[in-house]
Amino acid sequence: MHVENVCLLGCATLIAFLGVASAQEPQKPAAAGPVFSSTGPDAAVKTLRKEYGEDFLKDYHPNTQLGAVLKKEKVESLHDLLKRKR
Image (tube, rainbow, N blue to C red):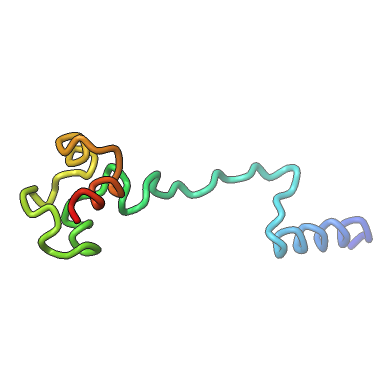
């Protein structure tokens, strides 16, 4: 094996070990995670009940999204809703 090949193989292995993408290897996009946390507008009432108790928003169906609740209650955020419910 030629010295040049050994260097290239060694460098490629080191780059792979360090997690650095080579110039020839296209980078993969970051894994898509949820856009909102579990309290974002897409959160279901049943999810919120796990955090705030089974009686939280008891007038709403468990699958109702927080965004719909906020709209109906005429508040901007979960924080505002929690302040009102106290």
